[in-house]
Every structure is written in structure tokens, then in C-alpha cells.
Image (cartoon, rainbow, N blue to C red):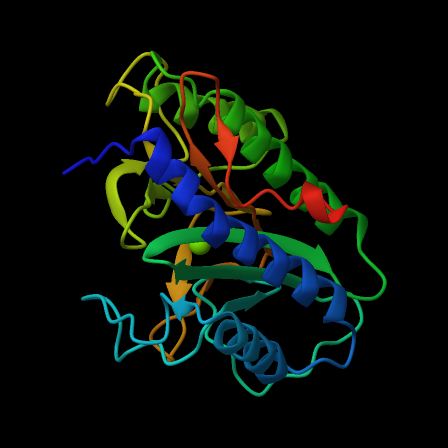
Length: 260
Ligand code: MG
């Protein structure tokens, strides 16, 4: 079921969005060559506790999950791109890091992801991250009341294809509200002017992610971490966006912190 939020409810979602923005900005700043993934999770957990927020991940146990996630952030490294379960791994020079973080504050969820390189970046990794970010920008630009879900999907896939990446539609954007995953599904590929009409009050997480040379994933033995089938690297960008009569509001925008 698709739920629409009143302007007052969208205002009430802002603290969750701001908190998620602050945590991702802080973690990106703190994460360096030599940082352990379990340390990133511990820092995120500490910030959640201090803020009195609630993790959407720690008890998350969907049908495809082997057991509850047990951590508060997804850390996907290099050829891992989604649902990376933090484990005892120390980041090395040139590692491509994707952090995906969702919490509930005052009963409202916000969900956002960012990719970056620690240490010396490879050109192809920076290009992939840039394409993913521009696809998210295009998606947000298409999140306009009166248009349709397919317009957002098409905006994402156009950016990816122009840069030579293929698209996996198994995992994509989703409605966000009292819980992390709601309707509608927002695939990362689609046809313009098709699908559910975008209405004021619809709040969605938009999340393009691409792999360098494939669109196929395999699941790690941990039952969570999704990695490219060919070892090529992945990047992910996500914001929670409210569609309003005055245009899209990026609830998880980090620009107020002076970072992108
Ligand atoms: Mg997310």
C-alpha cells in the first residue's frame, strides 16, 4: 500500500533525515586506510545511542536473510555493493567503500548511502562513483508531482547507460515512512510516463547503484553481502526524498554540513 504524507508529517521526518546525513558525513570523514569495518559499525551504533534513535538494520530479518542483520550499518567494499555485513576487515589503500544507513527518529525513517575511496583512488572508481551520484541527482530531478515512477527509473538508467554501465533491477528504491521498506518499488531502469503516478506527499528512497562490468550479483556466505559476479567494483548513492507541490525535498541532504 502506498501512503502519502501530509506537509506536517514531512516536516516531522526532517530530524531523521538530518541525523542520517550527520552520521554518514561523520563516518565518511572518519573512515581512512586502516579503519576496521567493525569500528565503523561501533561508531554508528554509538551515535544512534546518543541520539536516542533506533536502527532499522539490527533486527532486520527479511525472508532472504539467513538471520537478523545484527549490525547498524551496511559496509560494502570494492566488489561488494549492497547489504555489506560489517566484519573484521581493515581498509587498504584504494578501497572503494559504500556505506548505507537507515534509522528511525521519532518514529520516522530516513535511509541514505554514499560511496567513496580511501587512500589513493583509481580513476575508474571515481568515474563509477560520479556516475552513480549523477544518476541520483537525475532521479531527484525527476521526482516531480504529476510525473510517474517510470520517469525516475528512466532518468537513472539514462545516466548509467550513457556512461556504459548496465543496470540490475532486482534491488532499487522504495517507499519510506514508519518503516524502512514500503511501496512503491522504484526500479533503477524503466520507461518514461509509466508506473505509479508521483503525488505530493510520496516519500521514497532513491538509490542507483552500478557495477563496473556486470549487472549480476552473488551473495556471500554471510547470507547478506551482495557482490559482483565478476569481481568488478560497485558504487551506490541514496537519498530519502519527499515529493511535494514545491518540488523534491532531499530529507537526507548533507549540504547543510558543507559536504556533498
Ligand atoms: Mg539504504
